[in-house]
Image 1 (cartoon, helix red, strand yellow):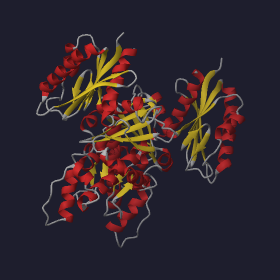
Image 2 (tube, one colour):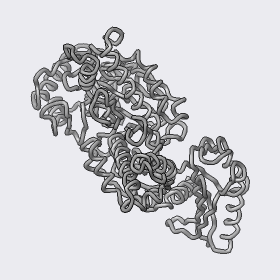
Image 3 (cartoon, helix red, strand yellow):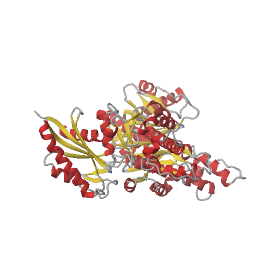
Image 4 (cartoon, chains in turn orange, purple):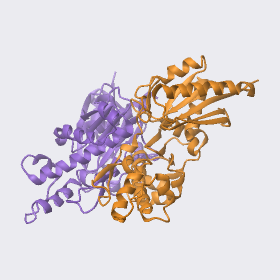
Amino acid sequence: MKQTAVLAIDLGGTKAAFAVINEEGERLMSSKLLLEDRTGADVGNLLVTEIKDILHRVQPEGWSVAAIGIAVPGAVDNGIVWAPGISGWESYPVLAEIQQAVDNIPVVLESDRTCYILGECWMGNAQHCSEAVFLSVGTGIGAGILVNGKVLKGIRDIGGAVGWMVMPSPVTYINTTAVSLEQYASGSGMPLLAAGIERVLRPGGSSKSWSAAELLSAYDSDPVAKATIDQCIQWWGMAVANLVSIFNPEKIILGGGVFGPATRFIPGIRKEAGKWVQPISGKIYCLESSQLGQLAGVYGAAKVALETLIY
Amino acid sequence: MKQTAVLAIDLGGTKAAFAVINEEGERLMSSKLLLEDRTGADVGNLLVTEIKDILHRVQPEGWSVAAIGIAVPGAVDNGIVWAPGISGWESYPVLAEIQQAVDNIPVVLESDRTCYILGECWMGNAQHCSEAVFLSVGTGIGAGILVNGKVLKGIRDIGGAVGWMVMPSPVTYINTTAVSLEQYASGSGMPLLAAGIERVLRPGGSSKSWSAAELLSAYDSDPVAKATIDQCIQWWGMAVANLVSIFNPEKIILGGGVFGPATRFIPGIRKEAGKWVQPISGKIYCLESSQLGQLAGVYGAAKVALETLIY
């Protein structure tokens, strides 16, 4: 008898991760593809080709892929995807395209934010939680949020857009009094903040161009990297404080490409959050890094796929 | 045959509103009491006395009070109330006290934030909404929030504490770069902001002491009142933007003691919110003032009481 498994896909703006996962949460197979310069239908084709290839490869292995779940970087409306990070996916009919290619295997789409928190609920740090937030800090910033045990999606599946939260701005470095969280505290924003800090701290300097990863690893050795990360710690702390005051959750889970490397700053983030948070809620929440790390999306997509089999 | 009705109570920090409301949402009787200098058990006694009096008064009227619902200004944990605005109610056993006084009439407590949004869902502007926020700006600032058709309470019933959201600060008037929303944009905070603005705009002046109501009514005639309200419009706009980005709701409903009089500023608040909000969510939400106004709390408490009769 064949073992039941699902194919889970975490589609991002630059790459797609594929995994075949069984009901116990074991990863039986996985692969990763870079999107490279693909846009629009070429991204759809890439997915279809890899999905067909994986379905072909698993046949002799003794598993059957009973459903396909896909985490997409944006919002889903009736199988149509809006993914601002993929050019040509302003309104892309990916569900129909993939469903047609795989015949009668059920295909289901969810936003990556939804998948992150569902992944942690299933196999990660949010097991047994009914109120929890997965704060994803990567190229952009968003959150998967669980309220009363269900994912907050909003009326158009774009709830959790916490990267748009208004934050106070350090006017010494940035010539404005208010910014959105994502503008300077995300993977794409941190280099812009570092450039502003370079101009102040090393006005005659080489004006080095930093990546977020370089900033994180130079924290102990470079004053610009330190000042940049310290400012981000303030913003991440304020963001955590806002989310804790609003949701009174059991847990805030920090994930995305920046956590990882920024996980060592969690005590500092909690301290900054403590300056702003509603004091009772601020005492009783846990602040943790994602247990699943970069796999939160595929685990969530797998869970969503498995749930299609129950009903 | 007697008509079924419930007794609904909206307890605030300075007064308590009582109403007998039937299943159709008609108010059959109402009264209001000032707490005056009462604290602790004296507030409990006041409630018990008025409740007994109302139960006595309705007897000949042809109604029976089938349940009692109470909106409290804080959080409820197993019948124990934490109400920071009532001295001595840090952990007050109001459910047991009232239940004992009314024998077998069921008594139920909910936070005022929960009651506001449930009231609007039942008889106000949030009918048929599954995703909506009641933003209450009064002495303090809080929100009743509906997600997937259910109230967001958090793990200790203190979710919706949106008055703690971090906001950028106008350093010209306030000597700091960040404040919490409630600090200066609430009924109790607006006078403090006005004092800061007095010092800048009329440095040799009489340094008039403003109330929030005076500021709202002097908007067209006094430059300090205008500058204060204009700054609050920015903060209220940022708060609305944060809530819309996070919840992607159908509606944000503005209520509490300040709206009322501030309802004329809703177009300005929406415009400010538009500078910050996630653009798709920002296009599709409604921003309205409470339809029930100061009655949102009693209507919500009535709805909660009516629901005890169904189950």
